Each structure stands twice: as C-alpha cells, then as structure tokens.
Length: 483
Image (cartoon, rainbow, N blue to C red; front, side, top):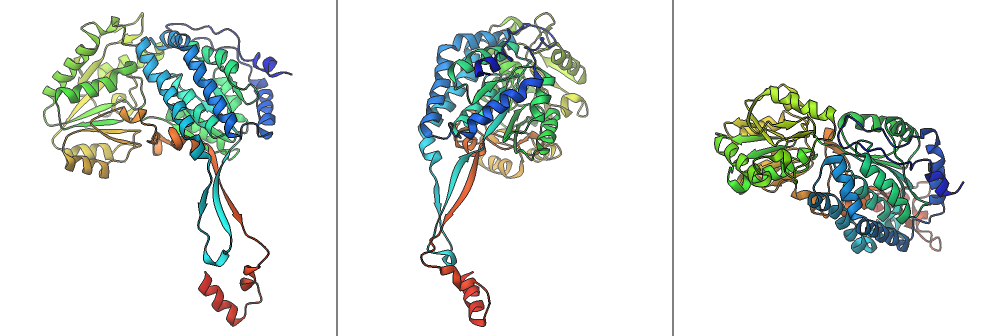
C-alpha cells in the first residue's frame, strides 16, 4: 500500500459546525492506525530523518506551507473559534514561524556533540554526549490554539530528527481538516502523518507503542495519556494548565491593560491566561481600570466586536455561564447563546469553594479577590496546586524577589503576563498538576532527543590493568588513589 493510499484512510472531508456542542469528527478508522504507524516506523528505521540537511528541508517546507496557506488557516480558525485574522496570525501562525526560524538558525549547534572530561582513572580516553533522535513521536494537540499547539511541538520533533504522527483536536474540525489537507503535501510522507478523529481514534493511538508522547490539554485526559504511556514505558511531555494567579500590587492603567489583554485574548481560552487576580488592598480602582481597559479593547458591545472570539462549544459555554452564579458580576456578564459569545467579565465576592475557584476557568471571566497584604496573597497561592504560570504586577524589586522565591509555578512573570510565551530561549512547561517537561527552542529539541553517552578508549595501552583482580595491597592503594 502506498503512503497516499494509507493517508486516504484519514482524510475525508471535514464537517465543521461554526457553533455547536461537538462537530462530527472527520472519518475515524482506529483499527487501521497500526498500518500508518508501521509504515512510519519502517521509514524511520532507515534513518532518513537523521541528517541535518533533511531536518532543515522539512522545517523549510513547514514554513512554506504556513506562508502559502495562511489564509486557509485564518479561515479555519475563524470557523472554529471566531478568531480575528490578526489574532489568528500572531497568536498561532507567527508563533510557529518564529519557532521554525529559531530552529533553522540554531540546528547546527544543537546537533553538535558535547565533549566531557574523563576521570584520571580512565585516561587516555574521549567521552561525549550526542543528541540522537528518539524514533516516532505522537503529538496530540489542543483545541484552543489548534495550529500552534500541534505545529510547535512538530517543529521540535523535526529538529530532533524524529518521525511524527499528529492528532489535531476534533473540537477544532476546520483547523484539523486544514492540517490533514496541507501537511502531507509539504512534509515527507514517509515519516510524517496526520490522523484525525475523536475519542476512539485517540484511544487507539494511545494503545500503540511510541517513542515519546507529547500531549497538550487538561489534567483529566493527561492522566489517561500517562497511564497508557506507562504500559510501554514511553516517556511523555504533558503541557497542561491550572489556575494561574495574578497578584496586583500596582493597579495602574498599564497593569490593568496588560492583565485584560492576557486574560481576554482568545476569549479567555488560553492555558497561561491569568485565571484570577489577588488584589493587595482595596480592589475598586483595579476593577474600574480593568473595565476601562476592556472597553478600550473591545468597545461597549464586545459580543459583536470583530476582535473578540467565541467559546469553542455549547458545553463549555454553559459551564462558563454557571459560574456567574458563584459571585457578583461587576463588569460585563452579557452573553449570546446563538453565537456562543460571552463578554469579558469581572467578578468579585466569589465563592472560594465553587468551581470558579477550584477549576480552571478557561473563558472570559476574571475573579478579583481582595487580600490584606502581600503575604496573604503568597499564602493563598501556596494552598493551591502549582499553576502553569504566576504573575506579579509590581515595580518593587523586593516584592519581585520574594514572589520568585516563594511561588511554585511553571513560569514566574513580572508585569508582562503571556509575554513569556514568545521568547524561544525560555522553556515552556508546567510543574506537578500543570504538566511535566518543557519545550520551545532548544528545550523542545532536547526534550525530543536522546542525550546519548559515548566513550572511546584505546586498547593499545591497557591502563585498566591497574584495577584488575587479584587485588593485592599495592593495587588497593592504587585504586583508592585513582577513584
């Protein structure tokens, strides 16, 4: 069977629904996934992905796909999430292109082996650490950034010399269909494939043996992924989320704008968005300025503003609406059931035991909680699971230092929430329930590589004879001195 025939099993016409609970998944053929995986593994075994030239060619091809089909992906993102063209480009496509560019410029140095010192007892000898491809990687993407969260890990997989299968989210069917349509045209069909489908397809994929599984999504499914991977002792990278706090000591308009931008981009459906605010002292001025910032971004009627997106599904929409009952809405609160849009909303006097404060909100609702002092804010964060990011809005170097020292999170950011995402030299990843493993830039290359040890020692002069048995008194003295 040719690769084109194999891919025909997975690339039927998608049936996206602009609004709805869950669109019917593109054709699912889970029983035939083994055929695709077998094909890729045979190709990977020939080492065609190993040469630097091949990796650079594939990175360039991926970049070309994004350049030539940017409009197709923008349209797909509009269908799936109501994203504006500008937001779709800079938050999805441009982020991936930056990853590609960074990998192309640094791949030579990343692939170089690193010489290490050899102890005196083993000299003369040479030792080095060499990054090697893992094999075949499974990448399971998320629906909230359905281009970025599939292709950025793919960049790392290509740069590290791996074959890969990507599984886009069925909750973003238009984007999934676009990826399935265009990726096989640009990337080498022998070692890269797209598999579409729903839960049955994911279950079948996870039942197979992979050399690494890269999953982006929620904690509940992450546990399923980790359990499936454990059966084959497969290493995993789990990029999750959690309730990222923002402690506000500086309630200036600039701080409010940065918080509002980070929270309400993509209609609040961002894993590192501020999930709640801890206002040190009275929150009235902060709430006023947050409302002012929201109006300056999305006008007085955000539900119809072209730069404000929608909720991905009716299920998530109804879950978010139920949170309005768990506190006082002091700004926003409007919604449109027909378009699944919820206006940027601010709440206070919230129930700390309700789902608003115990589950990741993942929508355009921002609770503001007053704390008496900075110490109380730190204690509040410490009592909760470690988040993917923690933000401090303060110009005080002393408070910044204390915050960095005391708060446990995947990233600590002062005064620029979300900005850490676009710095390719910073690792991106969580800790504990917010995930394991990091990527972006070299961190992704290292994560999807085996750092293999290599030692070379000549037999022309057998210096090891000093430690061979039998162990006389003199040899024991020599061994003690050498080791």
